[in-house]
Length: 297
Ligand code: NDP
Image (cartoon, rainbow, N blue to C red; front, top):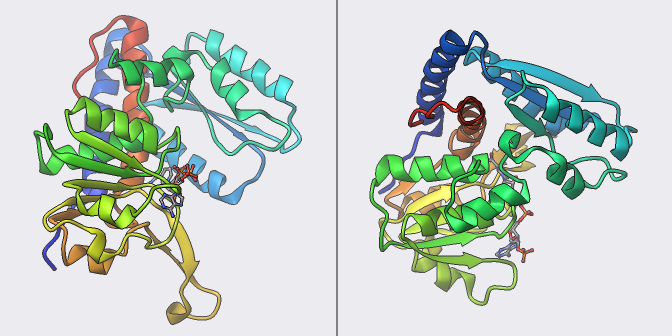
C-alpha cells in the first residue's frame, strides 16, 4: 500500500475541540452558548441516526441544541411556520432541517425559507450564490470538511488538477467551487461524462461523491493523488454472517490505496468531518450574528 490514510475521525475531534473553545469564549462574552435547532420530520431510520449524532456532538462541544421532532404527516405550511419561528428566535443561531423530507413537503421551499444567516447546512440559494461568487456565506458541511481534510495533507492547492465526481447541490457543486477558490483546475464529472476513468486519471485531487459502491477502481487513480471518498453505501456482507451489511465508499479502497498518495477511509473519513463542520458553521453563524470576528476553525 502506497497511500497514507487521512484520519477523518482524528481531524473531526480536533475541529470539535476548536469549536468548543470558540463556543466557550462566545458563552463567556455573551452569557449564552450558540444555539442550533435541529428539525426532523418523520421516522426515517438513517435520518434519526444522523440527528442523534448531531445532537450528541452539539452538546459535547458546549453548544445548545433544540430538537423539533415532527410527525411524518406534518404539512408544508406547519414546517414553514416552524422555520419562521426559528428565524425570529434570537436564541437560535443555526437551523438544520434534516433531509429527505416527506413527499408532501417541497424541500427547496423549506430551504429557501431559512434565514441565510442561520442556514448552517449552507444549502440556501443566497449561500450557494455567495460561495459561487467568493463572497463568504455559510458553506455546506460535507464539502467544507472534505476541503479541510485535503488541506490537512497539502496546504497549497493552486494549479493542481482536481476532479469531482458528482454534481449535487449538497456535495459536488460546492466541492468544485471550494477547489476552484483554492485555484485548482477543476473538472466536474457526472453520469453523462464520457470516459470518466480517463478524466479521473488526470486528477491530483479526486473527490468521489456519487453513491455507487466502489465505483472508482485503482486504475482510475493517478499515482500519488489525494483521494477523498464522500460516498456512504451499505452493502451486503455475507462474510460477516447471514443478513449482515457493511459500509463502503464510492472508491474501491484496497485497490486505490495501492496507487494514491493519500486516501480517506469509509467509515472514518469524510463522515465525522461533516458533523464537526456543522458545529463549526453554528459557531461561525453565531459570531456573525453578534458582530464578533469568527475565529479560524
Ligand atoms: P446525488 O445522488 O445527489 O448525486 C450523485 C451524483 O453522482 C450525481 O451528480 C450523478 O450524476 C453522479 N453519478 C451517478 N452515477 C454516475 C456515474 N456512473 N458516473 C459518474 N457520475 C455519476 O448524491 P449526493 O451528492 O447527495 O451524495 C453522493 C454520495 O455521498 C452518496 O453516497 C451519499 O450517501 C454520500 N454523502 C456522504 C456524506 C458524508 O457526510 N460523508 C454527506 C452527503 C452525502 P447526474 O447529476 O448526471 O445524475
